[in-house]
Length: 155
Image 1 (cartoon, rainbow, N blue to C red):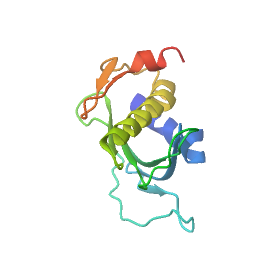
Image 2: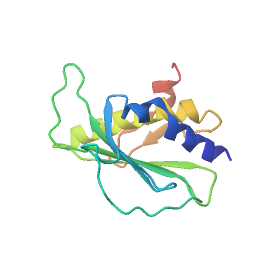
Image 3: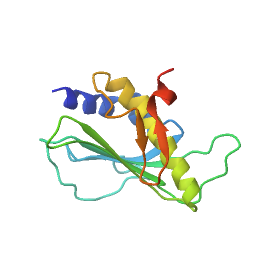
């Protein structure tokens, strides 16, 4: 199953091992398919919850914190972005959900855009080469338009 292969590639990728993607640290993530949460105790960022597990579906959730690049200011809120990748239960598609929290709407939109670009550029286009994007342009619920091909076709 191609979808399972895509999710397994993400589970095993270098970014997960290093707990970072693009300009984001991944202090924790969970795999609902396998009932796994990372990091595990005794790591200082470990956390305890009881996860439902569903081996018949594919779903990963990442809590991501932006690491300021040169010239950017430090963010004040922890766990700024929560990103979930899941396989549709009714169609042959993978869905991506992003939630972002920040001190301002503008910063939240910016961080959500950066997280989206990191995930699409580093995982979807790399591990999902057989996938077709539903649209080359994606509009977020905040109204920000992302042109995937303009951002990533050159890479």
